[in-house]
Image (tube, rainbow, N blue to C red; front, side):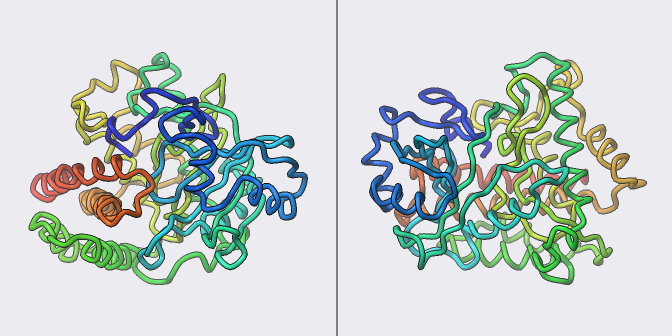
Length: 377
């Protein structure tokens, strides 16, 4: 997510479908290793997809993407083209986690909308899947993935255009008519943040053997400062950040938004605050944020400018309770990463070394959240 030592884009692969692909001779081993990890042979996968995916012919190679912790993801090469398969991981899983079926459903619903998504082709439930694990298949989308939010690979005008495209797409997502796209039942009624605090608080406590005093303090602060439900409901992505977005090969246009596992009906400020954490995260060799960087000098908006552009696009006069939304964003990410690290300890992580590194970010995120509780936004 945010740690450079867990971002394997630093070598050994090519960017494809917005994820860093490790070739079959790279660090993740060859085709046999990838097929074993997936839980089925290449021949079995070929037979299944040929029967289930229209136009699919002749699987020739399967290789695991080198990034991603929650749902293992694979590149499937076939005579008919290139596909991406996203699967639940093996092992005992927390309730409601690794929801590949939700990812499939929301991308299917958004097809043709103002929010670009990869074309999804097939969803295999656990009882249908040859591996016994649910998965879905989507088309590969060509383009670029950028892992460093400072965008050192491009010039200042392109940086500005990419951030503006992200802002416009986020506003478009929150303006989606959920009834019209068939997602009116995609979330629960009531105060979104109260539900989310309960969910991630329980999952954090279920994941760790020794909860930190800082995380307990943050959960108490959030409960005490919970805003009243203001009635805002939107389709929220849940993990809105630069490296979940495919940028077109030659322009700043967004070709596809990826990783919808955490999407739901919720409060739009959850997505906005989650991205704006990036402005506050350190850029110190251990974490890759925008803290300490002169954003204006390199063509990036400030946090205030990004928020203002979003509000203008959605016709909002401003945002109340911004410190609460930021603290919640830090807490939620810390809880997620604590769960990823716990899976590494239990032997169920997609990439154990990266998962353990994620765990090292939890106290940093907690400290940043506590800074906001003391100082405000």
